[in-house]
Amino acid sequence: MNPVRRNAFEKEITLARGLMRRNEHDEAFVHLERAHVLGQQNAAAHVLSHWLMLRVAVHRREPTAILGQAARIVLGAVGSIVGSVPTGNNDRGRSLSPGPSRA
Image (cartoon, rainbow, N blue to C red; front, top):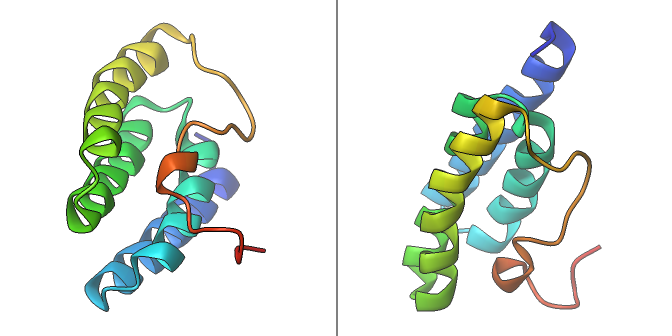
């Protein structure tokens, strides 16, 4: 990952973790989505973003999202390693996204 992308990824992860500590999971998830897009071509970054999304799903007690994120941790790691991941924004985490009030 190039340094600019790495810095942007780390900023989003740091913001998300701070929000998670304050139980502001909807806001944290927005930053995790951004981190996911930035880090999905790097296996460690991709897995970290899905791991934190899994923690949000557990906090929200959303079984479907928990299973989905658990699967994405495995599939995302493999996909990142072999270079087979979608690039850019995607809708995979929409079941965990905050409702329509999101900007």
